[in-house]
Image 1 (cartoon, rainbow, N blue to C red):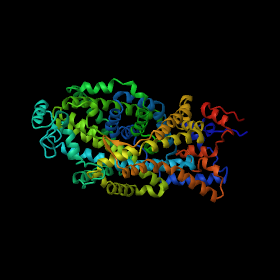
Image 2: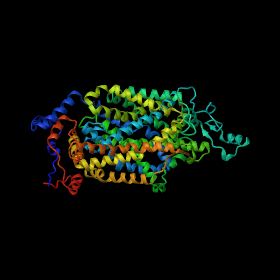
Image 3: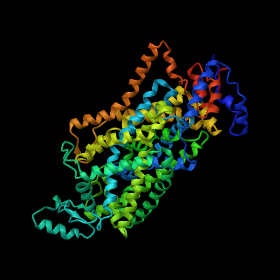
Image 4: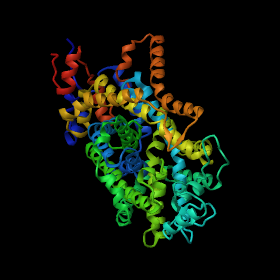
Length: 633
């Protein structure tokens, strides 16, 4: 029987403080020439190129909140609720966040903080599954590519807020139709005039000024994805300006963003509160709030609600994207990762629900003003927020001031949103050879921005909105859920939940409890499997409102849905072939690579000298992972 031995047994007596310093310095590092060589390589790397760290603990927490609480919470969460029966959709979202998303997020933060590595190199924990890291980086790249379009819309709204009259508050503009109505319109008189002109009542569907501004001015939306139209000068200009702002804020990585988040994270809550107060006082607001606050529990029997709740959790909270791993990798080794993970999960849920109150109060108002039922309002995708929020802003006292502040805040939130994914992509490249490449961070960031601008040009055409929603609909479900499932299995079962708990104890001085290890080992995998399988079985082609994408567009969408996750088996096969050709044991691919160690150099010396030996059968691994019981003596 093999003996189960943990590095924590050695490190336990070397807790943070003077005892740690004294004992570490007394370690004989000349025990074997092999260990000495590894020490020299690691120490040389760290001496010549120390990894950047946050300026303080609060900066990391705010940056993590900023990365997590972004544009996705402000528009995607209300849209998720709107699609799935209002408030009843919150129930599976909170459940998924509590028993799956939150613990998985904490796992990722600990992975990044303990190793000081980005999503690709962190998979030295299990080389066979390095493809998981590639999926995370590819998803982050796709995300910042197509979300740059939404960022450009926000900038355009901000610029328009400086005009003498808010262009979305009044009809009579060059882009408006005769069906446009605003706060000064008497809908009864207008309906009577139109019916006198020969139109039937059933054929008349009024559209708010904010709806027509977004669709006919901002997007200049065509009739479908096949009708590309021309590049919109105002959008390409805002698109370039948006990426220039991101580049200027993130050029120095965590050092620059750590200061920006003090404003970008706190200001949105103040503005949302003002919008909420005005929204709930609008005529008809209660109609929308009823849909949102009074759940229709019968909707919970539909599997689609649960699937979309899982996807929304991944979009808003951000596990399986790699951003949490990247940002945590800049932490000091003993940072309180558990506290920050809990704060981020609470902030994520609160912001989404809070934003929903604002949006649904305006939806109720628009429903009553246009005489259209809530279910039939012409909202789809991001349009829900880019129509509802401007409508609320136009009804506030001093609307220009509120619009400027609100969209300026969204610009700052957009930078926060992009930061985690942008840093994930750049650091994935830099960490391939950190000692040599970190000094070229500015050039690497500039190159990525140029690539994103050029490749994002189709998003600024008249068909850009259709492209945006196509990618948004397809890329998330299979990739995020599948990646999270494998991530949890690798850490909890292949690497071992008990061994991972030992690692966390070396950082925080306290092991995760049994409940958390049970969640990692059983609850999350089973829950994700329960989402993943029905998603495949009941998979249907996404639509955009009443618009159905043509076959070739669906094919492109399927490429975004399945190509990223296919990197996992491709990389695994490559690793096996490479291992076989070199004459090494394939089973070693399931063991951490030689460079897998804590990024604290002194703790790393101890870690390398105390190898971990696993139990010899499933029963021993089960008892060890869950209860920490060593049955091998």
